[in-house]
Length: 326
Ligand code: BTN
Image (cartoon, rainbow, N blue to C red; front, side, top):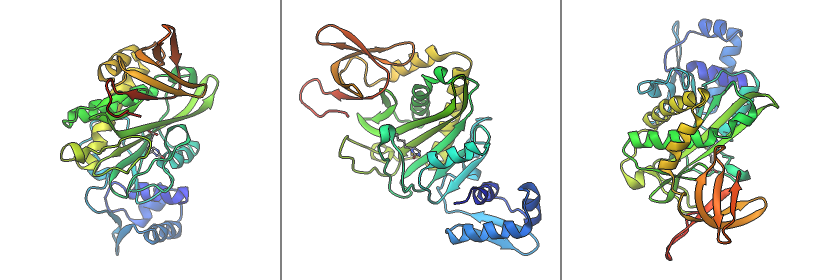
C-alpha cells in the first residue's frame, strides 16, 4: 500500500467521522486525492462509510486492535498515540521502517490482522493465521548511540512478561527474548535499528503473540494465550503491552538498564539450565550462569571455561529426558 494511503488510513483510525475537507487540509492534499485514497482503501477491503455533507468513517469488526479500542485501555502517553490497523501487509516491521524513513513520529504503532511475509529473528519467517495473533510494530527514537541499544530487546521481553502478568499469565523469557508459557513459545520479538555510529535514527520493535491459536512450528514447541486461559481481546492486550513497554523504555532511557536486567533474571527460563547456544561460530553447550552488564549470556562449559554469547539462540535441554525447548 502506498505510504500516503497509509496516512489516510491512520487519520481514519480513531474511528471518528472526518469531512473530506478537513482531511484534505490536515493531510496536505486535494479533496480529489483524499477520495482517490479512500477508493483504494475500499478496494483493499476497508469498510469506509461516507455520509453526504458529513464525511468518512472507518468501520472495523470487533476485536481488531484499532486505535479507538486500544485507547480505551491505554495509559501510555508516548507509545500508541497513533495506531494504524491494517487488514493485511507483508510485515509490520518492514512497513514501519519505511514510515520511519519518511519521518514518522516516535511511538506510532502499526498492527496487522495478517502478514504475508512476517519476519522472525535471524532471517526466519514468522507465521500466524489471519486474526489469530497480535502482530504489531512500534517505532522508538531513543536519543542513544547504537552501542547503547544492547539491552533494548531484553527490555522488550521484560515489558511483555509484565504485561502478560497483569492479565493473569505467568510467562518466562528464554534468552534473549522469546516469551514462553509452560515452556512453549507464545511470543517473539524482533528489534531492527537504523542509524549512524553515534546516533540512532530509529528502532522498530516488532512483537508477535499467538492469541487465539498458534501455528505448528517444526523447530520448537509453540502455544497460544487461549491454550492456557481465555485470551484477552487483542486491543486490551496491545494497550497492556504498550503501557508496560513505555514504563520500561523510560527506565532504559533514564539509565536504569541494570534494574531491567534484574527483572529479566527473575523471569528467566534460561538461567541455571543446561543449554546449547547456537551462534554464528557454532554450538556451545553448558550451564547458563547469568547475563553480563551488556545482556550477553554467560555459559559455563563442561571444561569449566566460561564463554559469553552476545548474539544467537539457545535451546534449553531438559534435565532428565523430556523435550527440549528450542
Ligand atoms: C522471533 O523470531 O521470535 C521474532 C518474531 C517477531 C514477529 C513479529 S510479528 C510483528 C512484527 N512484524 C514482523 O514482520 N515481525 C514482527
